[in-house]
Image (cartoon, rainbow, N blue to C red; front, side, top):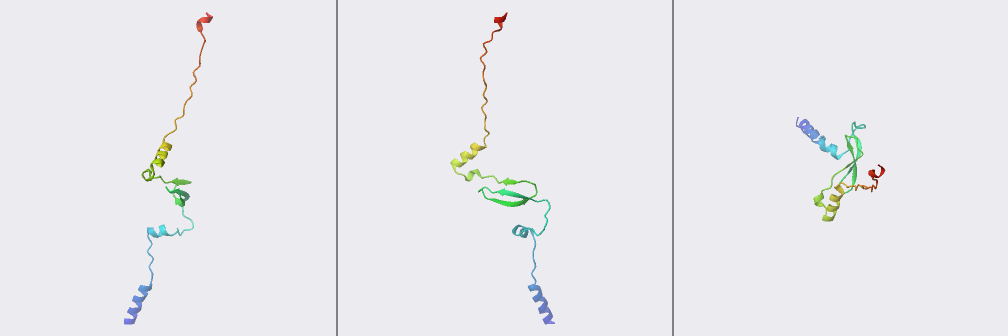
Length: 105
């Protein structure tokens, strides 16, 4: 009887139990041949590098914003100036009209 008890405990110790949770999907790949409602999308990180992710909305590229507080003063000014809208100068031509109505009466 002690031998059966010893063998049972040894078998339970040797059996590996795989704990599936949300982190295993983040570390490994998806184990499905067809994964519905996901579209390959480029994700551009603030440092300029890009990775390919599966996104649920069909988009070609997603750009993450840059933290302006980490930039130097010159780079910050360039970024702020590029965000401002460009004001187009309207050229208004003024015509010199020498026509006199009283001249023809």
